[in-house]
Length: 357
Picture 1 (cartoon, one colour):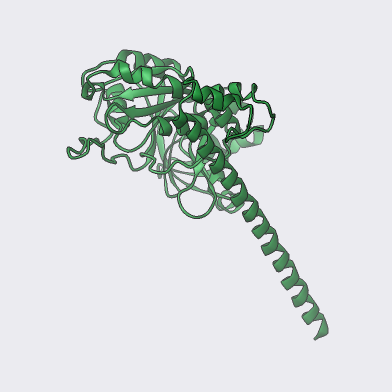
Picture 2 (picture 1 turned 90 degrees about the vertical axis):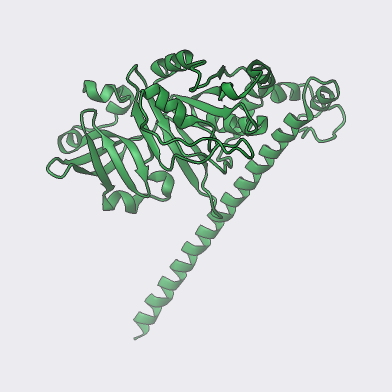
């Protein structure tokens, strides 16, 4: 049991298992996932794994399948070094986005995370609007957020960017790091050691894998140098993986997210834009949209310089995105109801034809 506890096992997960399940299956954590192939850890060993047919059939969407960080119950086959996953335990938290593509479907990036480290690099990649988007999804996930301004060795004045980040961070801790020079690594190590399961998230090339290599003390994760022509990093991590850190703590490395559309982030949006929500209490109209109505306290704050136009525009953009997602989900639900109704009609017609024979 101690080996499982080192992977993050606690009473929240232990209390979900019945005596019958304990007799048949073994708790394990998903440490690697790729295209419905998995690697599990039981603390002392790792196992190549696949889904049971029943679990795959019962999944209504990909969000119901295991993600890195999930705790599962598996049947182990020691002679093969393999396992079959039979059940996913209820998640304590999950970081989700809209899956890439046309369908409005949830993609779980990482599960059962306690801390999300939002990594951005101190070069041309730094984008306050992107940070606001990440923060909204992090607050919605149920995890704590920390902003990491990485590659300080490439920036002549990192502290100026820390100050610039204040409006977007809304009190979220901001750390400046460089795996190359070692700046900020002691503080980051302490965060990981005490932060439970920490997921590194950010766009491609911001240095997530380099930071993780520094924490692990090895070169387990491939890294590539930034591109000289535009200062941008290059995509290296291709799958999500979970590692135990020698000094204590657990980290999840994720591929760079080129697309980050909000998934059901209404509460997270309110938290990420707490300054605007607080200003809105002073608007004349309760349903003020802050788009030109008289007596708008938010507009007054922009005019007075207390709120930047860019931050308000970002708030409106993410609100519109949330409403659009909601409409797509409603449309999908209507389509599903229509599909099921047609199936019933076809079944009734077939039954009537059979009766007439």
